[in-house]
Image 1 (cartoon, rainbow, N blue to C red):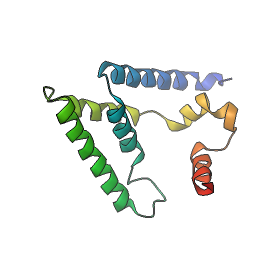
Image 2 (image 1 turned 180 degrees about the horizontal axis):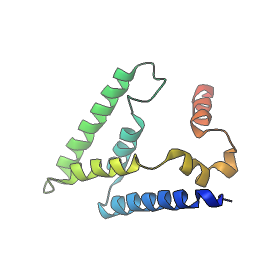
Image 3 (image 1 turned 135 degrees about the vertical axis):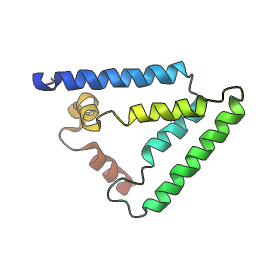
Length: 125
């Protein structure tokens, strides 16, 4: 159950998520584009605790170039598609991760932060 004082924030975040999904559907984003967009969200050189932020930045740059080249070959008549895809990412970054954790994962993982859970899973593998 969501606490009454959190409901406006949760409603706002759900609205933002719905907006992102609408734009992805509206752009008819394919599997390759979606994979590149996910990678761009994940490869954040400014994230705290990284051992090699420069390496992460290089991965981000490579992914962005791959997406750009892919869009140029798959959608040659569209000169603005690449920019529109990047603008969708800016909307994704506005979504509050802790609120999303509360909505979708709290009943499953309890009070453990999902970042910690993911790190533990990767270290165990």
